[in-house]
Image (cartoon, rainbow, N blue to C red; front, side, top):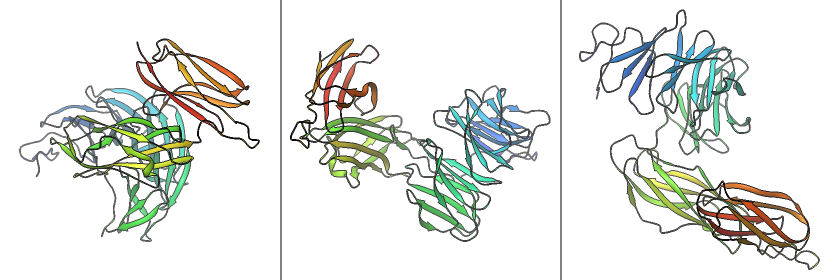
Length: 444
């Protein structure tokens, strides 16, 4: 159903006549309250709930190629014909900043924390990552020798996909700046301007002339395609439920012990109705080492509400374990997924090759509970490298206390806790052959 239309030909639709320009690109603000409509030399600012164009943005002698909001409602980016990007206030329609980029931008995207901007443009085969605080280019990715046709970021900013003018797609690691995979055309006619990651980052959709292809990551296995005409643009589905954390890392846990943590899934629902999670399950090769405490068969999450799920990791073997936790629901974007990771270590006393005890990590933290400081005491039977770290309940490293070689004998390490908030923490002392984990409380 057509709810509202703005026209530029003097006739209007349904009585509206608001935009004195030819519109070739539109974008919503993240909260859906503002629409920016891009013309050749003007950008209109419109209230999404009314027929009112309340402001416009122009620059003398400058044509506009692209406009895109980032994660915040107050600002959007504009590609300009003078090979630069304008950051524009959504309410004021005033330029906040101009950032040169070396080409005329035709694609602009933001990282989810709005600290970096990813840009590609006419006459350039590169994609540039620009630090917004400084305006400096901090990374460059080569999509092609001559032209980058399209590019897109994954939902957690970890992956970048590009398509060059030769039809070759490339997938890059944002953290390492390295190319991970190369994908080639399926139908023999070359990739076109269409790229989108699924929200769980397990699939990539690519457009071709005559094909819409779905690829599975990692390994880039081609799955399917079915489209009868050229695919020029692909929009990914905004999943209503997204986990707060993409990965839950339990870090090192001694075999025979366990570690519990809590992960929250946050409803990001653009509709006005509740979402029912019909199933929670853990899959993967090491799924048996992870478990859900107090598992419920189904539950409903209201718009804006958060839900906590407590997980447990109990290693049954040495080495790194991987699994995935799925939250299934009856909406587009299901299931939501969280990566689970942990590393099983040998028991605290490990016999060495000479029948000696390699590392006796009989560790204690005092006082417990602690306030401003604490002392970690343990005994090493031989000199070796030892790492001591404090983690929070999610397994995230909070403070690295020591990471160095230590002499054999009694060890007593003083720890300053003044920078930690009240709560439960884990003290993890590990060497090459053994590990000890102790829970302690910080109170204020």
